[in-house]
Length: 200
Image 1: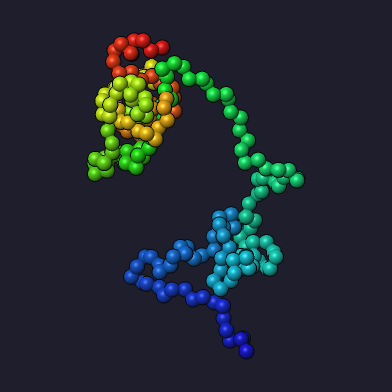
Image 2: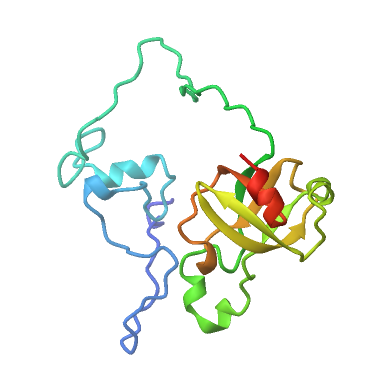
């Protein structure tokens, strides 16, 4: 009774006036076995569609072997997701702050500063401090202070940021005025010449 039924799914009609196709699936042909990301065929369940890619049911793939296995299964072993060794953290020296990167939607991405329209949305270089550190250093929001990282010194306006823990300073990542600074790193914040001379 169902001999006249078909599981074939016809393709969308061709458009001779367009180089594109009416399809969301992309390339409709059969890729080489080494590039086959998934097995799918119209009208077939995903697992059963592997039969359409084989020379015969349960046989080798058409077009040759899919590749060479690089990793063998562990024989009853347990896989650890994190197998790393950490060196003990260096203790913070007096007056030192940990400088971390702060990422912005516009400016931190390497190409956004090259487009005039998007570059106008990038923030100017600044240094973010926790309000506790800001009060300790007698700074206020937008006041200019100095920071020294690995012997490089610069003066930047301060933004007070409660999301930063005390003892941490933030610098925007990727901004033209801050290129060449590798963070996270240890540094010193100073607000005048006297503090600059007294720090280690």
